[in-house]
Length: 358
Ligand code: G6P
Image (tube, rainbow, N blue to C red; front, side, top):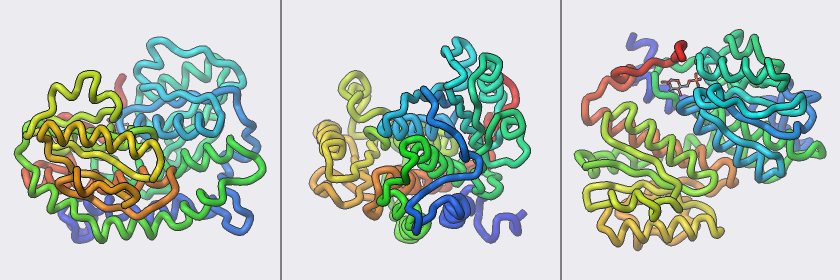
């Protein structure tokens, strides 16, 4: 088994470190720098739908939230649904609705069920999956393959990063037939190297050492960083068994702030030089004023040192790729805390890699 782990103690750490390669495989042939376009065979001829509905579970749902945000920013009506809830009260669809199942395994029962309902009602369907020939790939009208490589650890890592890339490609494809945002094309080309830089230089292990044994761990972000906050908390709770929650930064004051103490570290993503980052920074100040230990994932564009006990640095990047880099820090943080606690990281209790019952 050690051979399969290539010398790493856990598949999860191996898969975290494989992300530059996974990202390279995922972007290969899809990012054409000369033509300034991004695309995929599976999307060829896909006209802009009236609306897009994403259905997904767990980590893939967080990717779906990111995808829906990107599409709305591109002027496409889009929403993300938990697949199990979509199936309870299916949304109205027409033949101009595209329902996208985001599912690394392509076998999650809740997601397949939601896709089947959408198909029965006449929607067009697309599977975004890592597994060739999976049920989702076979049953949907179209397939976008993630090409992340096999993922063994129960906690999804490299498949999540490639899902975000796939969704950025989908958003560009639907946004503008003329060509892609040239900055995004460059960012996707550079992403594997930037991911490598984050992995090489991360201080997440030190942060894990400093903040273990706390009462609870909160993760906050805004806009495209909100799904990263949710994913950071999910990864953390899945493998450490510690209580962790992700919140939209702006929602803190509507409830969660009551939980914040000196024993609840808050992990925030503050990146970019716009209003989004400044508003999140204001939320960071609110928790800091209530004695919470603060760790900021920062790309250096805001002055965070005065408010953060620790900073996890990421390089500056396009707004659509920053979430991928920020999330790498949270993956490593969860891994190192779980490792210090001696948890069975690759097979957390009560969880399965793929859940084939509803
Ligand atoms: C399980 C796994 C999660 C995963 C979810 C959805 O709950 O433990 O890590 O995110 O299923 O899986 P999918 O294969 O549909 O992405």
